[in-house]
Image (cartoon, rainbow, N blue to C red; front, side, top):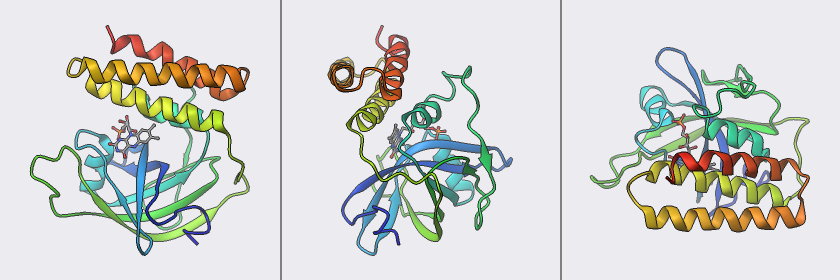
Length: 210
Ligand SMILES: Cc1cc2nc3c(=O)[nH]c(=O)nc-3n(C[C@H](O)[C@H](O)[C@H](O)COP(=O)(O)O)c2cc1C
């Protein structure tokens, strides 16, 4: 089933990972999922993320499947974009972590921390045992270059935020790449939701590139 829905061996797929804290506070964040032989799934949240803390506390998680750049933007920058409508959660079938309402599908997992990868690694690694897979009626198989460009911009922007005041050269490179992706989307799909998301990303950046 995982292979059929696009979790291909050797690939990385981007999901909206929902977890729950020790105080039962739900959390969602975009995360990459490394698909290895099996297929077995690994997630690598940076140690200073809420996701890593929640997974250390309890391994319950849902990989919410979506190609909606608004959701990626919202969950990647939830502290900065407080004015946006909150993302709505609902109960999952097999784990304590919540699902996100309205997405294309769910992979419910139990994540288990791997032994320390390298002592100086800044991220945690978790192997995921899949408990339940489900597609919803919102499932959309179409590919949009503008949508993937918008999601790429959001990843670059999260890196810029993480590198703030530490690596101006890398920040400059990432800003350049966002500008290139924005030019591309303005050319192919200027009135799309993806173009609007990239404009929101551009508005966030001055905080970290002073
Ligand atoms: C598509 C996408 C993939 C991402 N993948 C990861 C990842 O694999 N690991 C990570 O630590 N952060 C990743 N990020 C950045 C986090 O989503 C971001 O830092 C988020 O604010 C973490 O939220 P949290 O503190 O609630 O866990 C990704 C962002 C995007 C847009």
